[in-house]
Amino acid sequence: MVNAKATASQRVGRLLTIVPWIVSHPGERLTTIAARFDVSEKELLADLSTVSMVGLPPYTPDTLVDVVIDDEGRVTIYLADFFSKPLQLSPTQALALVASCEAMLSIDGDNANPSLANALEKIQRLVGSNDHGTVGISLGAADEKVLKIVSECIEQKSAAEISYHSYGRDEIRSRKILPQRVVADKGNWYVQAWCLEVDAERLFRIDRIESIAIAENKKSLDSVSVAPLETVFSPRPDSSTVTLRLNKKTMWVLESYPYIRAEPVKKKKDTFDVTLAITAEAWFDRVAMQLGTDVEILSSQGFDAKASVVAAADKILALYS
Image (cartoon, rainbow, N blue to C red):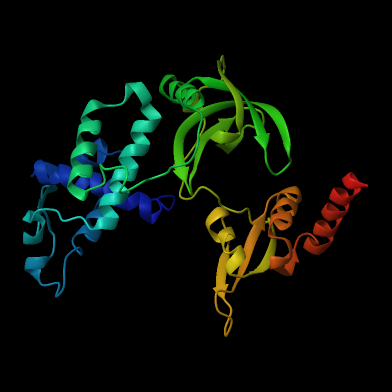
Protein backbone atom coordinates (compact mmCIF):
# COMPACT_ATOMS: atom_id res chain seq x y z
CA MET A 1 0.00 0.00 0.00
CA VAL A 2 1.27 3.50 -0.85
CA ASN A 3 2.13 5.55 2.19
CA ALA A 4 -1.07 7.47 2.97
CA LYS A 5 0.89 10.20 4.73
CA ALA A 6 2.62 11.30 1.52
CA THR A 7 0.69 14.19 0.01
CA ALA A 8 0.41 14.80 -3.73
CA SER A 9 2.95 17.65 -3.59
CA GLN A 10 5.39 15.49 -1.61
CA ARG A 11 5.10 12.69 -4.19
CA VAL A 12 5.71 15.14 -7.03
CA GLY A 13 8.76 16.51 -5.24
CA ARG A 14 10.05 12.98 -4.74
CA LEU A 15 9.55 12.13 -8.41
CA LEU A 16 11.40 15.24 -9.53
CA THR A 17 14.41 13.83 -7.70
CA ILE A 18 14.02 10.13 -8.53
CA VAL A 19 13.34 10.38 -12.28
CA PRO A 20 16.51 12.33 -13.25
CA TRP A 21 18.58 9.93 -11.13
CA ILE A 22 17.13 6.86 -12.89
CA VAL A 23 17.67 8.50 -16.29
CA SER A 24 21.36 8.98 -15.45
CA HIS A 25 21.62 5.45 -13.94
CA PRO A 26 19.75 3.19 -16.39
CA GLY A 27 19.33 -0.43 -15.38
CA GLU A 28 19.50 0.07 -11.59
CA ARG A 29 17.37 -2.37 -9.61
CA LEU A 30 14.15 -1.40 -7.86
CA THR A 31 15.59 -2.43 -4.49
CA THR A 32 18.60 -0.14 -4.95
CA ILE A 33 16.48 2.86 -6.01
CA ALA A 34 13.98 2.33 -3.18
CA ALA A 35 16.75 2.13 -0.59
CA ARG A 36 18.52 5.22 -1.97
CA PHE A 37 15.40 7.38 -1.75
CA ASP A 38 14.04 5.81 1.46
CA VAL A 39 10.75 4.57 0.00
CA SER A 40 9.21 1.12 -0.18
CA GLU A 41 9.24 -0.79 -3.45
CA LYS A 42 5.43 -0.55 -3.59
CA GLU A 43 5.62 3.24 -3.24
CA LEU A 44 8.29 3.40 -5.93
CA LEU A 45 6.25 1.25 -8.34
CA ALA A 46 3.19 3.43 -7.74
CA ASP A 47 5.24 6.57 -8.44
CA LEU A 48 6.74 5.10 -11.62
CA SER A 49 3.31 4.10 -12.86
CA THR A 50 2.34 7.76 -12.54
CA VAL A 51 5.42 8.83 -14.51
CA SER A 52 4.43 6.55 -17.40
CA MET A 53 1.32 8.70 -17.88
CA VAL A 54 3.26 11.97 -18.22
CA GLY A 55 3.35 13.48 -21.70
CA LEU A 56 1.85 15.93 -24.15
CA PRO A 57 -1.30 15.81 -26.30
CA PRO A 58 -2.30 13.70 -28.19
CA TYR A 59 -0.61 11.36 -25.65
CA THR A 60 0.66 8.92 -28.24
CA PRO A 61 3.56 6.58 -27.27
CA ASP A 62 6.15 8.96 -28.75
CA THR A 63 4.97 11.82 -26.50
CA LEU A 64 4.88 9.85 -23.21
CA VAL A 65 7.64 9.02 -20.75
CA ASP A 66 8.48 5.34 -21.18
CA VAL A 67 9.25 3.44 -17.96
CA VAL A 68 10.66 -0.06 -18.50
CA ILE A 69 11.09 -2.58 -15.68
CA ASP A 70 12.51 -5.96 -16.78
CA ASP A 71 12.01 -9.38 -15.20
CA GLU A 72 14.99 -8.87 -12.89
CA GLY A 73 13.64 -5.58 -11.52
CA ARG A 74 15.99 -3.30 -13.45
CA VAL A 75 14.51 0.12 -14.24
CA THR A 76 15.16 2.28 -17.30
CA ILE A 77 13.37 5.50 -18.21
CA TYR A 78 13.25 6.76 -21.79
CA LEU A 79 12.25 10.41 -22.00
CA ALA A 80 9.98 11.71 -24.76
CA ASP A 81 11.49 13.96 -27.45
CA PHE A 82 10.12 17.16 -25.89
CA PHE A 83 12.50 16.70 -22.93
CA SER A 84 15.47 17.21 -25.27
CA LYS A 85 14.30 20.71 -26.21
CA PRO A 86 15.83 23.69 -24.32
CA LEU A 87 13.83 24.70 -21.26
CA GLN A 88 11.68 27.78 -21.88
CA LEU A 89 10.53 29.62 -18.77
CA SER A 90 7.53 31.90 -18.85
CA PRO A 91 8.04 35.41 -17.38
CA THR A 92 6.06 34.35 -14.29
CA GLN A 93 8.17 31.20 -13.80
CA ALA A 94 11.41 33.13 -14.30
CA LEU A 95 10.46 35.79 -11.73
CA ALA A 96 9.39 33.06 -9.29
CA LEU A 97 12.84 31.47 -9.72
CA VAL A 98 14.53 34.84 -9.14
CA ALA A 99 12.47 35.43 -5.99
CA SER A 100 13.33 31.97 -4.62
CA CYS A 101 17.05 32.46 -5.25
CA GLU A 102 17.03 35.90 -3.62
CA ALA A 103 15.21 34.44 -0.62
CA MET A 104 17.89 31.76 -0.17
CA LEU A 105 20.70 34.28 -0.53
CA SER A 106 19.14 36.68 1.99
CA ILE A 107 18.83 33.87 4.55
CA ASP A 108 22.46 32.75 4.17
CA GLY A 109 23.83 36.31 4.27
CA ASP A 110 27.63 36.36 4.20
CA ASN A 111 27.71 32.55 3.97
CA ALA A 112 25.70 32.51 0.73
CA ASN A 113 26.73 30.02 -1.93
CA PRO A 114 28.71 31.94 -4.61
CA SER A 115 27.48 29.52 -7.29
CA LEU A 116 23.89 30.40 -6.47
CA ALA A 117 24.72 34.11 -6.58
CA ASN A 118 26.34 33.70 -10.02
CA ALA A 119 23.36 31.69 -11.30
CA LEU A 120 20.96 34.35 -10.00
CA GLU A 121 22.90 37.09 -11.77
CA LYS A 122 22.67 35.17 -15.07
CA ILE A 123 18.93 34.58 -14.68
CA GLN A 124 18.36 38.23 -13.81
CA ARG A 125 20.29 39.25 -16.90
CA LEU A 126 18.19 36.97 -19.08
CA VAL A 127 14.84 38.17 -17.73
CA GLY A 128 15.95 41.79 -17.50
CA SER A 129 15.43 42.06 -13.74
CA ASN A 130 19.01 42.86 -12.74
CA ASP A 131 18.11 46.54 -13.09
CA HIS A 132 16.54 47.20 -9.69
CA GLY A 133 14.80 50.20 -11.18
CA THR A 134 12.83 47.83 -13.42
CA VAL A 135 11.78 45.02 -11.10
CA GLY A 136 11.54 45.09 -7.33
CA ILE A 137 10.82 41.97 -5.27
CA SER A 138 10.02 42.37 -1.59
CA LEU A 139 10.02 39.27 0.60
CA GLY A 140 9.17 41.08 3.81
CA ALA A 141 11.11 42.67 6.62
CA ALA A 142 13.21 40.59 8.98
CA ASP A 143 16.06 41.47 11.32
CA GLU A 144 19.29 40.22 9.75
CA LYS A 145 20.74 39.29 13.15
CA VAL A 146 17.66 37.22 14.02
CA LEU A 147 17.79 35.42 10.66
CA LYS A 148 21.48 34.70 11.16
CA ILE A 149 20.99 33.15 14.61
CA VAL A 150 17.98 31.15 13.38
CA SER A 151 20.10 29.82 10.49
CA GLU A 152 22.91 28.88 12.91
CA CYS A 153 20.44 27.00 15.12
CA ILE A 154 19.09 25.09 12.12
CA GLU A 155 22.59 24.19 10.94
CA GLN A 156 23.83 23.18 14.40
CA LYS A 157 20.49 21.60 15.46
CA SER A 158 20.59 23.73 18.59
CA ALA A 159 17.83 25.46 20.54
CA ALA A 160 17.03 29.16 20.66
CA GLU A 161 15.64 31.27 23.50
CA ILE A 162 13.32 33.93 22.07
CA SER A 163 11.13 36.76 23.34
CA TYR A 164 8.09 36.59 21.08
CA HIS A 165 5.22 39.00 20.59
CA SER A 166 1.99 37.05 20.20
CA TYR A 167 -0.19 39.23 18.00
CA GLY A 168 -3.35 37.30 18.84
CA ARG A 169 -2.89 37.65 22.62
CA ASP A 170 -1.04 40.98 22.40
CA GLU A 171 1.66 39.88 24.84
CA ILE A 172 5.39 39.14 24.86
CA ARG A 173 6.45 35.74 26.18
CA SER A 174 9.73 33.83 26.40
CA ARG A 175 9.87 30.66 24.35
CA LYS A 176 12.49 27.96 23.90
CA ILE A 177 12.38 26.49 20.41
CA LEU A 178 14.20 24.07 18.13
CA PRO A 179 14.22 25.83 14.71
CA GLN A 180 13.75 23.52 11.71
CA ARG A 181 13.38 25.72 8.62
CA VAL A 182 12.72 29.29 7.45
CA VAL A 183 9.91 30.04 5.00
CA ALA A 184 8.50 33.17 3.34
CA ASP A 185 4.80 33.68 2.69
CA LYS A 186 2.69 36.72 1.74
CA GLY A 187 5.55 39.13 2.41
CA ASN A 188 6.45 37.70 5.84
CA TRP A 189 9.27 35.50 7.12
CA TYR A 190 8.51 32.57 9.43
CA VAL A 191 10.55 30.01 11.33
CA GLN A 192 9.03 26.55 11.63
CA ALA A 193 10.13 25.06 14.93
CA TRP A 194 9.45 22.66 17.76
CA CYS A 195 8.34 24.65 20.81
CA LEU A 196 9.79 23.04 23.94
CA GLU A 197 7.31 24.94 26.13
CA VAL A 198 4.22 23.20 24.71
CA ASP A 199 6.12 20.19 23.26
CA ALA A 200 4.57 20.68 19.83
CA GLU A 201 5.26 22.17 16.42
CA ARG A 202 4.73 25.92 16.09
CA LEU A 203 5.24 28.67 13.52
CA PHE A 204 6.78 32.01 14.53
CA ARG A 205 6.84 35.21 12.49
CA ILE A 206 10.42 36.42 12.52
CA ASP A 207 9.54 40.13 12.63
CA ARG A 208 7.72 39.46 15.93
CA ILE A 209 10.81 37.97 17.60
CA GLU A 210 11.95 40.74 19.98
CA SER A 211 15.21 39.02 20.96
CA ILE A 212 16.95 35.70 20.31
CA ALA A 213 19.94 33.78 21.66
CA ILE A 214 21.33 30.30 21.14
CA ALA A 215 20.45 28.12 24.14
CA GLU A 216 21.37 24.73 25.50
CA ASN A 217 18.85 21.95 25.13
CA LYS A 218 18.48 18.34 26.14
CA LYS A 219 15.93 17.42 23.49
CA SER A 220 17.29 16.62 20.03
CA LEU A 221 15.50 17.78 16.92
CA ASP A 222 15.97 14.25 15.56
CA SER A 223 13.53 13.01 18.23
CA VAL A 224 10.64 15.25 17.14
CA SER A 225 8.58 15.32 13.97
CA VAL A 226 8.41 18.62 12.08
CA ALA A 227 7.04 17.98 8.58
CA PRO A 228 7.55 20.44 5.71
CA LEU A 229 4.77 23.01 5.50
CA GLU A 230 2.02 22.60 2.92
CA THR A 231 0.77 26.06 3.84
CA VAL A 232 1.78 28.64 6.43
CA PHE A 233 -1.67 28.70 8.04
CA SER A 234 -3.95 25.69 8.49
CA PRO A 235 -7.02 26.34 10.66
CA ARG A 236 -7.83 23.76 13.32
CA PRO A 237 -11.12 21.86 12.93
CA ASP A 238 -12.43 23.55 16.09
CA SER A 239 -11.38 27.10 15.09
CA SER A 240 -13.97 29.84 15.36
CA THR A 241 -14.94 31.51 12.09
CA VAL A 242 -16.41 34.78 10.91
CA THR A 243 -17.84 35.71 7.50
CA LEU A 244 -17.34 39.30 6.35
CA ARG A 245 -18.62 41.19 3.34
CA LEU A 246 -15.72 43.11 1.86
CA ASN A 247 -15.85 45.90 -0.70
CA LYS A 248 -13.18 47.45 -2.88
CA LYS A 249 -11.75 49.48 0.04
CA THR A 250 -11.33 46.44 2.30
CA MET A 251 -10.17 43.91 -0.30
CA TRP A 252 -6.66 44.13 1.19
CA VAL A 253 -7.79 41.56 3.77
CA LEU A 254 -7.54 38.84 1.10
CA GLU A 255 -3.87 39.66 0.53
CA SER A 256 -2.98 40.19 4.19
CA TYR A 257 -4.64 37.29 6.01
CA PRO A 258 -5.32 33.60 5.26
CA TYR A 259 -8.95 32.79 4.61
CA ILE A 260 -11.07 29.65 4.31
CA ARG A 261 -13.14 30.79 1.34
CA ALA A 262 -13.91 33.91 -0.71
CA GLU A 263 -17.00 34.12 -2.91
CA PRO A 264 -17.97 37.03 -5.17
CA VAL A 265 -21.36 38.57 -4.42
CA LYS A 266 -23.70 38.42 -7.38
CA LYS A 267 -24.73 41.75 -8.92
CA LYS A 268 -22.32 43.62 -6.63
CA LYS A 269 -19.07 44.58 -8.32
CA ASP A 270 -15.83 44.28 -6.29
CA THR A 271 -17.69 42.71 -3.37
CA PHE A 272 -16.76 39.40 -1.73
CA ASP A 273 -18.07 37.32 1.17
CA VAL A 274 -14.96 36.07 2.96
CA THR A 275 -14.75 33.50 5.76
CA LEU A 276 -11.79 33.81 8.14
CA ALA A 277 -10.60 31.36 10.78
CA ILE A 278 -10.25 33.10 14.15
CA THR A 279 -7.52 31.81 16.42
CA ALA A 280 -7.79 34.69 18.90
CA GLU A 281 -10.65 37.15 19.41
CA ALA A 282 -8.23 39.98 20.22
CA TRP A 283 -6.71 39.55 16.75
CA PHE A 284 -10.11 39.80 15.09
CA ASP A 285 -11.03 42.87 17.14
CA ARG A 286 -7.95 44.73 15.88
CA VAL A 287 -8.66 43.74 12.28
CA ALA A 288 -12.29 44.90 12.65
CA MET A 289 -11.13 48.24 14.07
CA GLN A 290 -8.94 48.71 10.99
CA LEU A 291 -11.85 47.89 8.66
CA GLY A 292 -14.26 50.23 10.44
CA THR A 293 -17.60 50.86 8.75
CA ASP A 294 -16.36 49.57 5.38
CA VAL A 295 -17.04 45.96 6.41
CA GLU A 296 -20.21 44.05 7.26
CA ILE A 297 -20.17 41.09 9.67
CA LEU A 298 -22.53 38.52 8.14
CA SER A 299 -22.16 35.63 10.59
CA SER A 300 -19.81 33.98 13.08
CA GLN A 301 -19.36 30.57 14.68
CA GLY A 302 -17.67 29.78 17.97
CA PHE A 303 -17.94 33.35 19.25
CA ASP A 304 -20.14 36.43 18.91
CA ALA A 305 -18.15 38.57 16.46
CA LYS A 306 -20.43 41.62 16.65
CA ALA A 307 -20.45 41.66 20.44
CA SER A 308 -16.68 41.20 20.51
CA VAL A 309 -16.14 44.21 18.25
CA VAL A 310 -18.56 46.38 20.25
CA ALA A 311 -16.75 45.48 23.49
CA ALA A 312 -13.38 46.31 21.90
CA ALA A 313 -14.71 49.69 20.69
CA ASP A 314 -16.04 50.47 24.18
CA LYS A 315 -12.60 49.76 25.65
CA ILE A 316 -10.97 52.15 23.18
CA LEU A 317 -13.55 54.89 23.89
CA ALA A 318 -13.00 54.43 27.62
CA LEU A 319 -9.34 55.37 27.14
CA TYR A 320 -10.42 58.80 25.88
CA SER A 321 -12.86 59.44 28.72
